[in-house]
Length: 489
Image (tube, rainbow, N blue to C red; front, side):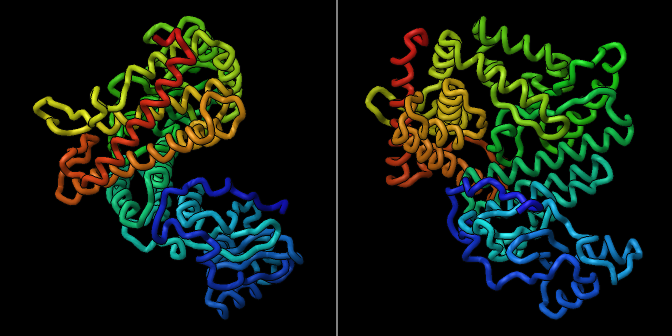
């Protein structure tokens, strides 16, 4: 299908309920279709008679495009076009499709990310139907798709802040709808991306177009698509080598400050470690970023390892993405070849151990503020993120999401982790992250600010047993890497 693209196969598997339902089960009827040369008036009449909001343009079995009720309003009535024109004149042709085995949550994420309301479901070349927000369970309030649409139209930072205040409620609705941690992370990060992109557009309204190509880069949990409601920001600006500090520096400094301060106003607080594009150190041309990575890999001292843990998790949010693609491919190749660097990365990762005591029981915190609790983020989730990053670096994998890194590394013959071990780590991470979400949901229900400190006493005996087993899986894989990289010790 030359006019459509099959989106990535379903990767969100930790869902239950409606959000985990395969799209094939949500299709109630065959899609309405007409040939591309049918008139706009014929299309409008057919949509009215069928009681649907879209019509597919089909030439035999081939999908050529889609026309929605919004197209009729914005591209025909508002523009004063003749209804006698062919439908192909107003159709959207660069379609994003999903396979029938994709989940409702996959469709919801695709809609929110790309600002669309109709997703064709395609089995090879055959169009099975169309899903909309209502089909995938977007009837809750607030709606993720409507929220991202509002963000894209927000006139100023104050409006963006009001809209982003809905993110905790979105997370609550997703958790209640059965979305697991991976699905929640993908949706919440999509909202963060939308806020970032809108802030950049608002900045450009004032500053004008950029003097040289650039790409805005997310780091950390945003890069991995693993955010939860309310977090700090980690970002950077990667500039084309045509960048001249004297001629262009003021523009990009103003752009970065506007966006970072805007994110802070929207609840994504300034990074405590100042790893943001508003810090000139992280607003540099491609060649300088190359020098950074070369130094971190060739001289892996503690600060270099800490920075590597952040900046080897990078994802382009908007801008000239080939800049980041080029950098990542070069530095992944360099890191993969450096056993010294990988060994030190392993040693750095081993500094964060799962909270198990010498008898194999769960060790809780004893400080006054969090007595009897487990720090799920730093003691349980971060070690798996670190392991997955090392597997990806050792294999030269470009994946950034932790679950994707585990799946890809486990599927490779001769990688640092076996397929069974990778699956065990994936399951352990899913369980731990689910406990974190459930804990935060309970806090939100009673008006507390969500945190990562889970009271052990709040878990059932079964849950404590499962949590302990998850910690042992992490501990075992840390031990494997420690033996493989003696320098880590």
